[in-house]
Amino acid sequence: MRNTKLIKTLSTFSTEEAKDFRRFVDSPFFNREGKYVLRFYDELMKYHPSFDDLPVRESLHAAVYAGKKYDDVIIRKMSSVLQKLAEDFMSYEAFSKLGTQKELISLKNFRERALSDSFELKVNELTKALDDPAGSIDLEHYRNKFRLEIEKINYFMESNSFVKEQRKSMENVQLHAVCDGLMNLLDIAYNIHVGLTTMFASDSNIALKLLDHTSVEPFLKELSKVSPNDHAIIELFYLRYLSMVSFDDLTYKRFKRSALRNLALFTRDNRFTMMVALQNFCIRKFVSGERNYAVELHDIHKEMLKGGLLINERSGFINLSSYRNIILTAVNLRKFDWMDKFINEYRERLLPDQRESVTAWARSTSLYSQKKFEEALGELHKVKNDHFLTKHDIRILQMKIYYELRDYDSAFSAADAYKKMVENDKVTSDLHRKSNRNFASFYIRLIRYVSENRYKDLGFLKHEIETTPCNSKEWFLERLENEISKARPHGKP
Image (cartoon, rainbow, N blue to C red):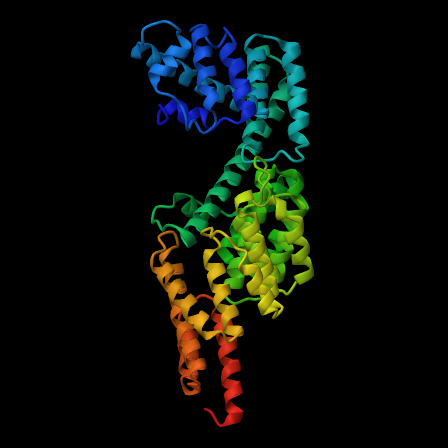
């Protein structure tokens, strides 16, 4: 039964969810099939969450229906009933977390049942909450405001009164519909552009074509007069989109200023996506050669850390990719004291099976940049596993240390092993695999030329690296320039 839909579903339940679901199954309102379903559930949950030692169907039947002959139809029925209850439970849990949308459903029920007092009280509550949305704005914000006004209009029409209020609601419906459409259009368009730079290309991006024929700036100017609060929200989405399209410094500064000024209005998820957009802009600029954006990127990282945006709410752990970016950016800026504090402070925020190795890699990276090569190698030897996000960092750092220590035998051995690893890497994209393959090839030639005093070949290698995509290009060019400079006093070319 381990591979059944039911077991796969139950394995996703946390301990608390499992307890809540048991109460759900124990309720006659939800479970109309009787006590045997609960017994079946209790028997299964003895093996939660992995269900590794889950017994065969016959044993489960014997535990639930003691003394009765095995009936496969009954076990299948119990599994089906429990799966349906699990799906109902997940829907119930999701509904209970809907927030404003759930309140709007209650509002509709009050109107349809002609519960005027309850309806008007709920309208006042929702209006206050949506007009003062600190920490709650998401992509449903204007849609919820639109639905609220529609309910009010229906209520006014059914009451055949409140003409003035009805007119005001009609005006609000227009505003909320336009803001909802534009905010979601800008969100979709931004993500399409992200996809165009990373994953896919398409000739039928209707959202982009619509924006090409939409004058957003004049609309924002009018919106600022009608509703300054709504203008601040829509402008932020527009500037995020524009930063992807124009990719210029001025738009970035406007986007960053708007984000930091208005971020508190949004839900955590939307605060995160806005800050990630700023982060990705800085990374793209840095990769394109504008190294001054490392400072901006470091500032964005600090803002995200201060806001707790890099810690997964459910697990309490930091994303490894984010951790890696933070370390590499801090090293680039030589923020060693800050980085040491970060490493110590966020050590327990790394997943337990990655904690020792990732911390050792981070410390080794810091020590290497401070030219403490022996200490860096010592830390690197503490690395016990290779997560796919850091395995290339670890191997490349190791090779760089061997170069600095002039340990050529170890350097050749490490380079040969790395070259084989790159060829067998099925996770990394073709672009990065080519970059890593070139690193290994150039590294081997660098070590060979330096160890054999073949200084005349270094200039050719330098030119080739300058014109070829490869990992750690700046590192190569700096070392080659140093080797060439050292050779000149001795009459070498």
